[in-house]
Structure formats: C-alpha cells, structure tokens
Image (cartoon, rainbow, N blue to C red; front, side, top):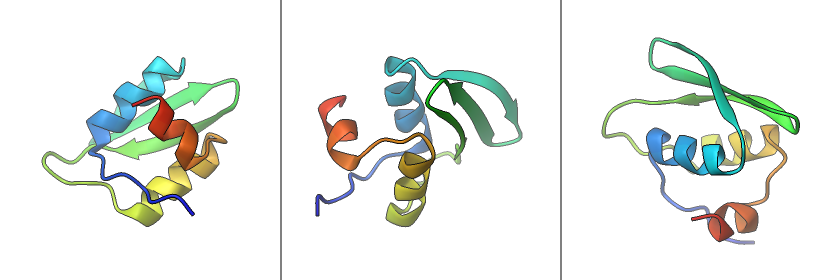
Length: 73
C-alpha cells in the first residue's frame, strides 16, 4: 500500500483544482469542492497537516487513489 503524503488543506485544494474540482463555497475553515466525480469538504486550518485517515477519506469521496494524487503533485 502506498504511503499517504503529508499535505495541508490549502495544498490539497490546489491539487484538486488542477484536477478540475472547484471550490463551491466556504464555511468557516472548511472549503466545499465539487466535480462530476464527486464532492467533498476539505478543512483548512492554518499550519495544520491533514491526518492520514482524513486524507484517505477525502480521496475516497472524490474517487481518487493515493497514486493518482502523487502523480498530480
């Protein structure tokens, strides 16, 4: 199994935007992204890294695999 990279919320949003996701709205410190493949919520807390379980859950929501994420870095 491929190891999950350590990413901050803003970094993950930038990667997802490259994959044609768009930020639909923001509520507090959470950004809501949408695409034909799915939608998800990404927490953006300054200076905090997303936990590996949360990152895997977000990737599952948008139907991506860790290897796809690493290729788009």
